[in-house]
Length: 403
Image (cartoon, rainbow, N blue to C red; front, side, top):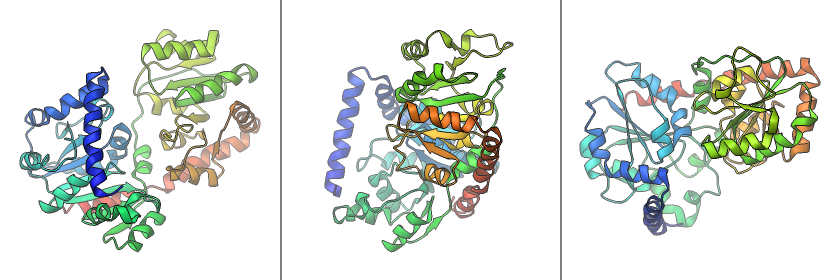
């Protein structure tokens, strides 16, 4: 994909989003309205000269930015203005501070950012993980706005490092600083003549270590397996083995909790399943508890022993670290190519890939059949994640002087 194709792709993306909005896609509709009204939205805020602009594609990337946001707002005059591309990020991510603001990022077309720059008067733009919009980066460079990429992972096969991606690579080279999650990415960039590159590690290790526990209490009298942000594959495989393993509680936290999807999940698990909203919390939970509430997954990991994390069968693995820091041994599907933390935990024998229901059953029985070894793994995964902390401090040392 050369730069011309990129520009054509942006136009196609814009047409697609408009079409999705027109045909009733609620998320696309909200994003379209938000992009149209970004100025009206930002006008509600009193922005000052100490505003840090952070961009995240969606909710997951915004969560990764939490330790950086906390660092910024620890200084009383600092503000954070956060832009999102997707409606799921904008709608679901909030930070409890009157110095935190958010808006939808306009489509990445030339001259789309002139008015935004005049309005924000930014000194620094921080990109989280990816969602690198080339026209925006180029405009930042031309307007002397510093740009930083954090928690980045690069691979040789990416188009930036091909002959036809030369223009895009040159634009990325104008970024003020790039912080990578691993040394392989750092080395790849340096070998391609990037300057100001440093392996800082992943901010998610800091984020999950600092997470605040929500107020929810469950009575569980058996070992517990949790399906965290589960998709149909994880739920299907769990449902196939649920009657073949005795004396276990299951907590199912679906990726989406619309009523029609919850009905399907409840039907899949049959008479043993109840919704959280329908149970008496003063009594032990049923064999299968289905969560129909948003924002409690991280807290629920405190009650489980093993976490089967969603997204591993589609290549969109959910956050495994927030389960690990609570002492869960981790299971997930086989498609984890873009998730280095998965490989790290597999190498430490603290996480396991699952391909089918038989492997799920055998792995669970093996882990629960040796309680002392399971406890050692649970203690080890907590310590392993704690040992990876520190990315935020490395990043903050550089960026605090840029605004």
